[in-house]
Image (tube, rainbow over all chains, first blue to last red; front, side, top):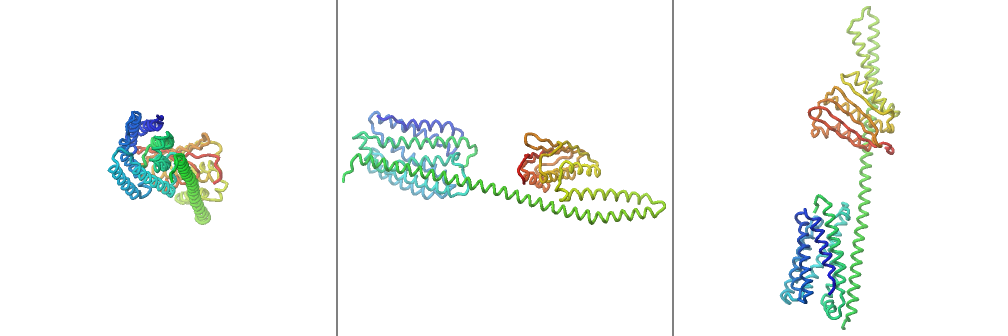
Length: 214
Length: 261
């Protein structure tokens, strides 16, 4: 059994979200609840795995909530910078289509990796558009203290980096079962560290910024 | 063709590394571009500030030029007319065995008017301002006000003012404007001007015991705007503290040993 480093990163991020976003209402306050949900799901998933029970059904339930939250946050962070609605709507429709197709075709016993991949591509495109418009706008923004920038950077790194793992999801799963090569585990641990590291930094930036701008 | 396990692991590792490097490159590009934008933004801010300063300085130069022309006009034209009138009164006085009291009073009043006109003309003259000394001129201005009004100005100052001549002129105009504002709007009995140098800062406070003013109503008046602009030109700050019940304190803080304007 491999040690679940990702859960440690998530717990650390949850702790920082609770510490630094305690007085933030609305969009930023939702991060606390999302991180709490993520940690609970990951812990239950890990327990099920330890007890040799399938846990794909759990991640299949979590997937639309995760994508829904991330798309919502992307909308809130991007809508002032550019017209993100069309990209979001297209990503959501495609994701929902694939999610229902996978759920009906193979039930909840198999992880809906195709819908996850589609959602990932949507997030990557929105993140790239954000960077493009961020550079295009005339005003200078200090990226080292700009909380939205680090949320987007974390998402971008995570979803861009996991593309290969998503494409070869089935192969990697069977390789791990047959030959115990934890390539997916290594990639996800590394990228989770980057994602939750960026988010934690973003929460600190948000905490230090008294007047909310987004 | 069947792809081996090693190949898949290799492909996934390579693609992940490439994507990670691509993401890192994009982030580095964003950071560098943003840094360039910061420099551009900073340069623009400095240029705008420099432009504002130059604009203000040319406005002041125009004002000084206008005052200088006015000074010459007062001295050469009106001054000469008054002198001629005084000469004629003198001749009339001497031609009469007993000069009437009104004529003597008129002669004295005219002498005072000529004196006033000379000092006014002097205080407006730009050439004379080239060898400007703030302390001497403010003292002259105070004596001029003392002779004309029932108002007392107390002036406390250091021996030397650590400002260049052109800066001293601007400061003189600020103090002159402040005093004129107080006389015009607050009708004070006493004005206290206190100048001291503390920690590379020249602090000038002008306090009056007049009627005071409502800060919000008068904040954008022409006089106040002039004072603000001039103080900004010297790189300093100005503050007004006034009570509606009476009394106003104007505090000007200027950095000393600044580079040339």
